[in-house]
Length: 95
Image 1: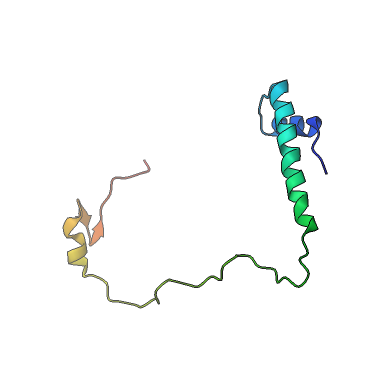
Image 2: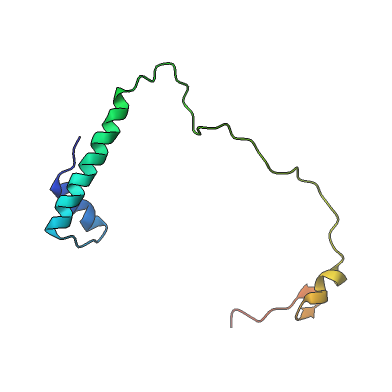
């Protein structure tokens, strides 16, 4: 598979990029080099290799969820700039 200059122009148009002729040629060469390199992967013998989504096994490093009692409402509201009926009072967002 190879990328043509027309393909680069099409993608540039979709991305709303204004590329010069030199940039179009440059990107065509670079993208073809990338595809050529990626084609080398097809030469690898992957028979018997188990598919993986990660190179290293993943483990959950999170702690267990443990319920704890909440702080008393009076202590929570000590640093509140304004309070009303046991809740934080904030400026109105909607008119």
